[in-house]
Amino acid sequence: MTLFPPPEAQDTPPRRSRKRRAAAWALGAVLVLEAAINVALNVGVVQAIMRQATRRTELTWTRAWWLWPIGPLHLRDFTLTQQDTHRWWQVNMDALEANVSLLALLGRRVDVQRIDGHGASFRIEPSFGVQEEPPPGPGYRPWVIQLEDVTVHEVRELDFGRIRFVGALDVQGALNLKGRERLQVETPSIRVASGAMELDRRPVTRLERLEAKARLDAPFTGENRWDLSKALSAEVQSQMALLPLDWLNEHLGQRSGIALHGGEGTLTLDLHLHEGALANGTRVEVESSELELRAGPIRVRAPWSLEASLASESPTVRQGTARLTLAPVQVSGPEGVAAVIPEITLAVLAHRRAAEADWELEPDLRVARSQPMDLKLLNPWLARTLEIDSGFMTVQSKARSKSAKARDALRLSVDSDLVSGRMGDIKVLLRAEADVDARNLSWDTKSLALTGTTLRLSNVSTNGPVPIRAWSGVFTLPQARLSLSPTVLSARFTSRLTDTQPMVALLTKTKNLPAFLTSLLNIQGVTVTGRVQIDEQGLQLRELQATGEGFSLEGHLDLAQGQLTGALLAKLGLITGGIEFKRGRQDIHLLNAKRWFAAQQVPPFR
Image (tube, rainbow, N blue to C red; front, side, top):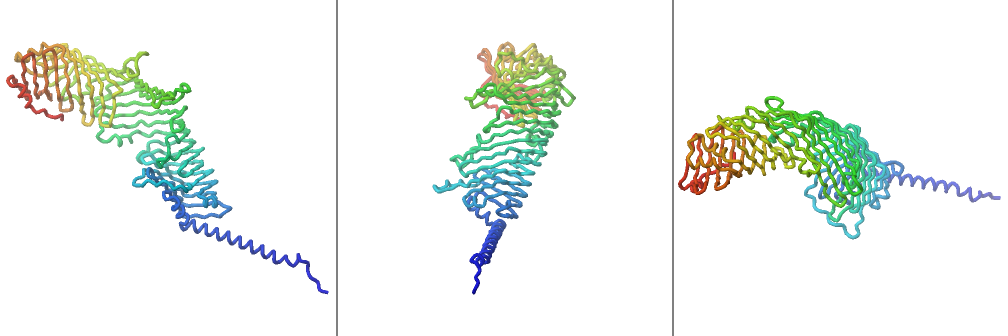
């Protein structure tokens, strides 16, 4: 009798063997795939595939390993570079870990559930010479990139060209990008423990604290670019130390005539952005130590502070305020402190209604009445023309009534007591008042515009060969500019004079005048226009024209150290004559005066 084992017993060894072989083959396949993935990551295959799929995006790294599918992707010295027709930017990381879906890459998707990076930097520059990318064909499938739970530690540098952050920054966020459709970035946490902001590689602030969150939502337009006009919303709270403002001197230029020193302080910022615009709750506060400004021989010293905020006045009206305060302000010259102004405040109130695109600004300048300023401070500028022996002036803003218009809030009043001075060997006494329209004050790093200034002279008297007694005049400067290096005042002026006394005093050094000139003394109410330039060498008048009842005059004059040169053509009634001024003498031309005057060469301004 033959015994056979049951069928189950006969099949057991082959079944186990097959399972072991299947497991071995599966393990071998996984190992082969794992090896293939890591080889592809380290010999440039993946980079080449990405470069072919999107030519303007480049990925590189020096080392990579991936224990797929149970572990994250590890990259060393990772670099992402992107370039289009408008900008070039690059992200670098020392180390990067990411949970990546391999299957998603086959469907033109970058699906990353977690990214942990260390030691990062970002750089962006304008892009030049890159041709426009042709529009995709009808079967184009855009890449979709989804990055969730992104954390980057120790961001060392954010380089935006002239502006750069260096320090230590941590950021958490997420990114959702669908090529040629939409870009969304969420950063719920941005923290800076320490760092500095630089301008042109020079530190300007030191960050002591920064916490922020931001959202970027930008659609892709038909012009092959992202629409960033309303893309950014953010909240930033920061405190930083302002470094001395000496760094501004490089941007003003060596020939600007002014220099800054000091002015360091603290800045507190609470910034709110909504769809690319400042939002309610935004506040800026600055407290600074003494700032020194040098302009030619003048020194101005003052601590300064700034407060600015934005809020809603009503659901349809937004309101912003800004207040810059300098107090106290010390003005000094070569001979020491010349004046002290207790406080200067410039406040700006801004309104904008929902239906309007522009802000309506209401500036308000308040200058407390200064202590008397010694006018001898001006002698380094005026010594060649008028040397001041004694006299003081005060500066203050004009009082503004509640019914006054906003433009009246930007006017300065300058008043002097009786000023004593000399023009050559001639003694001069006068009082001066100036009305300065601060709306027209502007600074272009080399000069100060004084357009719109009105100068009133009164009680003018001299002891020259032809004395002046109780003369007055009003001068309006529709164009005026003061350059400080070298010091030059140039202006176009129009004036209304009580009479012609100063004109005659300039025309002669002797009382024995011809009847033609003597009769000028009797002309009242004269209007004079022209161009003037005052520098260290003296005074120059060009395009000079004067008119009165039955009287006219035109010509050009130079006055330097009491010496008068130039040429004039005067007409009084039916009499026309020319006057030529040479050093130490004058010639009268009564015959063919117009022809003689037309032949005179007008020297240009120095």
